[in-house]
Length: 168
Image (tube, rainbow, N blue to C red; front, side):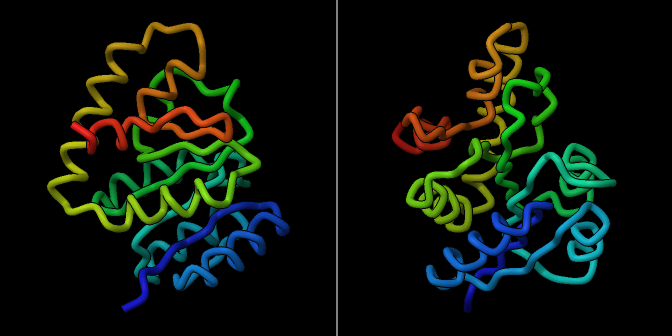
């Protein structure tokens, strides 16, 4: 059975590009252009993964991240953002991974595959480890250092925290 991915981004070109790439990779793709469409889709459709832009019209990406964690705790959330420098410590605590825009397609597909193939036990272990790292670096002044704690993978090739955990 095909896994379903909800792509929530207000940028039409990003939505359509991600739809094409993810469908070619064999996934079923749902699209949402704003926060309301995303919330409705989360309540009416069954998705295995949410790819979430933080800069969505109301409700915004941060609110949707919190809502997803509350209402769909087993759903993985991959945050796709160009707002890296504006993120505060702990603001993305509910995200499973962060990818900076514009995304490297191969890297995005790799992260999607990792998230969709995690068992509940692996997900719980990774989230516990991420929370521990987030607490350890919460006072960091460098946004990249803070966000690395939730598991990041940038085009420059920084290894994700989850990949490091899986290697152990």
